[in-house]
Image (cartoon, rainbow, N blue to C red; front, side):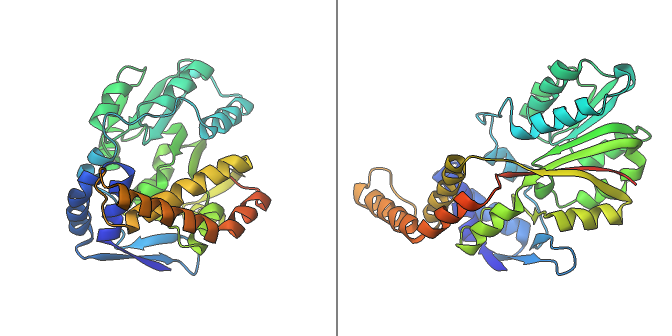
Length: 315
């Protein structure tokens, strides 16, 4: 589909966080890939978009990108639609309920879950950020594991009624470890709730050269066909799926965000006191917006938002 150089990826992440971190990002990404370029490809069988080499960001990468200043949303569409579905299912006795969240962040969803559903039998989280693990320990969480390998060692034999993965799957290069053991950890009537970036939206961005799924942060992109293939492979079924509804203004803001960052990543690093260079950058952004007028029109007619939500259950 397209290639991404370690230099461009480093500029992309530096533009999102701090341009002073460019050198670190370039060195870190080069070490992960063992080369200067990665290829984004699409599987002909299932439609999964993936990066090669299939290598996700490591602890050093994420410790810089998600520092302690990161603000996690207390609520978002992912949480609302998932909790509504759980309430519809009329959850069984709370004292027996076992739940697992992979990629818990600072516990925003867990806090909302407990507030809505009440205390449950056991809450387990997988989160590699030390700062977030400290925040999770302030909540009624029983165990916090750093990664999936540590989780499988510590939780041998536990079967979960609900497993949650909000905007996490696209970050994992070891998701087969999870789904290869899904029969062991998911209760017979259990459910896995997953959200990922909406593949329809990302395909539109690709068409205009705005690649929002940037490795090594995002190493895969999941369509409904890719989820169907994953489910069949692991004796699961897609119980439900939904695409986040989103207002036209929100779609525009999201696209503008990615256009701006793409241009900043493509441009030489700018000294914040260099007014001429900053003016040139603004001119490039303006020209890019003019070029994409038709895309803004297409967005208005497309009924999709930022997030794709899917619920998986055993067959």
